[in-house]
Amino acid sequence: MENLMTYLDKYAMLIVKTGVNVQKDDLVQLDISVNQAPLARLIVKKAYEAGASQVVLRWTDDTILREQVENMDIEELRTVPEYKQTEMEEMIKRRISRISVVSQDPGVFSGVAKERIEAYQQYDRQLLFGLRQAAAANRISWTVVAASEASWAAKVFPELPAAEQVDALWDAIFKATKIYEADPVKAWSLHEKRLQEKAAMMNQEQFQALHYQAPGTDLTIGLPENHIWDSARSINEKGFEFMANMPTEEIFTAPDRRVADGVVSSTKPLAYAGQVITGIKLTFKDGAIIDVKADQGEEALKSLVAMDEGSKHLGEAALVPDPSPISQSRITFFSTLYDENASNHLAIGNAYAFNLANGVEMTEKELAEHGLNRSKNHVDFMIGSDKMNIDGIRKDGSRVAIFRNGDWA
Image (tube, rainbow, N blue to C red; front, side, top):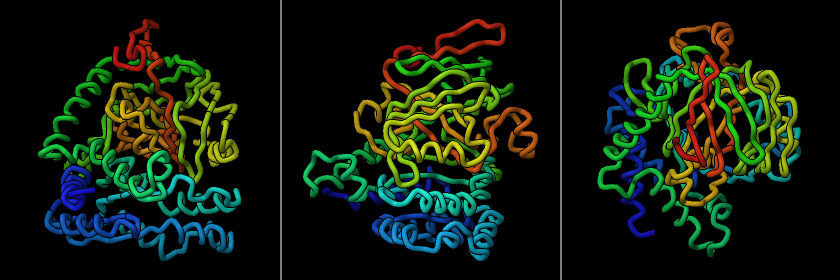
């Protein structure tokens, strides 16, 4: 791609300024693939220019990770060493600003024994649990973005010659994150304002429940009293704004984990635990998943749902109009970061505390008492299409059309 470094420079600036909004003396953690060294160098440079006190790098490598998962002693694989847990706790205590750059091959663990994948997932959840809880309460600034890598690009653009795939994925990423705009930071500010207007409209209504209808889907979920619809723009405990993921086209809230009845079917593949799961169909009763089916990856999905009690319940409901740019690109990214912003979606697992009035000040027990799901998981799956209708149900039982044929009514 011509001018790649110019676009990467703008991308790094957006990640630092809009993504985590680095402030003077912030401690920044960057998780990124070893294959993304040029972008990593630019992010580090921009972070220090913004006043970061230190940037801590955590390099990732798909090939090495697969070797570890296949060959380590399984007990060591699932156990977090004390020094790593201590380091993570220190990062949380110092209120890191966390940047995650995802570029993983969606099928990195394809063919690996199920019990080994589960052991690694147990390790990952345990290591990051405290960090995810801090993020869910907006105690830290965090952002998730993507980078084009050969193995991922080949999955997204199999019809292109191999030499063109990485550039094609970079082009899609830059379009989705507004890097081709003259001023991406300003463009994001305007985009975020529009999303906040939709969230304000839903907050004013305070629906008691949502009813989803589409081919393969007839599901009603409850919403807790004083729930809050939000967009990816958040405010950390120091009062600074940050953007939790880029791109974003969603507004979202926390459902009531005690109220979900019916069936819901996925409309896009889910990349989870290094595997691709397709054709998801979940049946709910009294808030809990009681039946799990999938055309591909059913065992991985069942394993996810059985992980803990919270994995049987929902932790997020997000609205994304089908006419959104990512949806209209007609690209399946095999990445939740992108595919969730092309489609209405739900999440299995943990709810965000900030989706409830005063939730960030509540204990875990209090959040559960108010209906918010608690879990070590948070896995989004996509359910939207141009055939989806959604009604909001008020306390008096009256209905309001929210979505018709996949778009705002």
